[in-house]
Length: 631
Image (cartoon, rainbow, N blue to C red; front, top):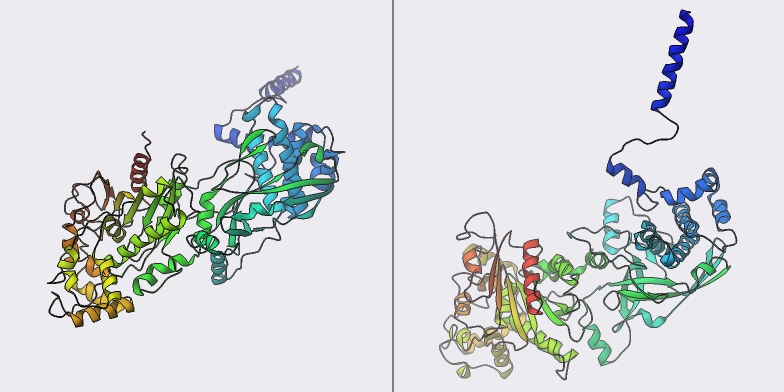
């Protein structure tokens, strides 16, 4: 009896346990783990998405795919006819996963074709844009194209020095071959043909293409990408065409420029092509500065763009970094003959914004600000960005004269008839010494600079005509009519407090000034010893010019600026509390502060503030004001 009671109790306990854990049921999980499982894919985790696994499980192919992925893919494709959306998507992801494992170009291309068919066919499917597979399929298409058209990927060296050299030269970036050719597919071949005219960019031809979709960007806060269709690439360029027009178009493009482009492989009948052994395809190349969308089946579809990665790739190991110290120490140190460069070929109707760097610096230091402003949806179609570079130890008046001449030259080159009103509405943004150059572009100096150095009028000076013309260019300034707004960033209007007699002595020993200018000034001094106020001082450096007690600073302060031209100050200071008496490590607040500006913004940062969010936001606000956009 007792034995029966124990057995009954055991049976009841077993039934109770079974009631607590039924064969089918649910358990509670945290939100992140649930959505991590829902959103997994071959691109994010290396695992198949739930959608693809459903197709495998529904067809009893889970183990078969693990044992024989190629055979399983052939089975799922069948004759390639009447493939459902579910099967098209699964084929794209399964093919991509297999391609990743085998590094197989033909399966990368197959993945791209399946994904393209899914994206173009799903327009009529229930779920529309809310179907997460659509974005994933577009990425698979983009990567399938770039990987499928690539030669073998280079392996980075294990030697650190060699790996650094490879990274600087772009050797670790994967090249993409966009030549016309026939490529293998798992079930046939892809016949790729392109239009040579699409490889032209201004007076250049795109010659080498590098995949940037998988590159990591460093040194910039934000990576701007436009989600869309196509493989984002960076293109090298080579001169195309001869003659004055071609040379003029090329001379203002920076050395080692890279072009952000998107490669799009168009299939006229994507679903039907899967059933064919020969798949014709048209290769289309779009530069990001000229096109952001493409037409597919009567619809306007965004192109996949990655301009930030292209900019970072261009600056990786670029010679421009070497100019920072080189152009300060040696007056004749130049990467290129020209000093004013355009980030993109001249675009009529877009207002030029000229970025002018400071002492011992280079245009590359504007990278962060340029990345933000050029990717702003409002500004990017209204502005074009130019950069000015110069030997930063040269006398400031000489560098300003070079800037003035460069602005006149480029306007004459691109718009000889003066038909583009945007070129008469320029904005100059100058950092540190660059701000002083910008100020001189809106300055009416009269005879002040000459009077500060000479006892007699300029007309009474004795000098050869060529020397006298040179002196006239660098001593007398009138406002440049095309400059309509100036932004000063950490600009030492009253000089730099860091410039001491010890610093000046050291600078004079290590920098070399332009030999021609030095000899001509020496000649003028010899011929006019009794007519000059300071004989024997020699040609000043830019550091001399930024001495708070120097003649240049005091003379510039007396020069009026053009009426009606707005001026804005962005002043960097370190530390909290009142700004009076504070500095940014190089320039004191009192030196950067000037009266008569439209606005003054104090940013708590060091002297190199061009990349600080607050600084960029203030520049952004001012530029919106300039183009007439209010927010």
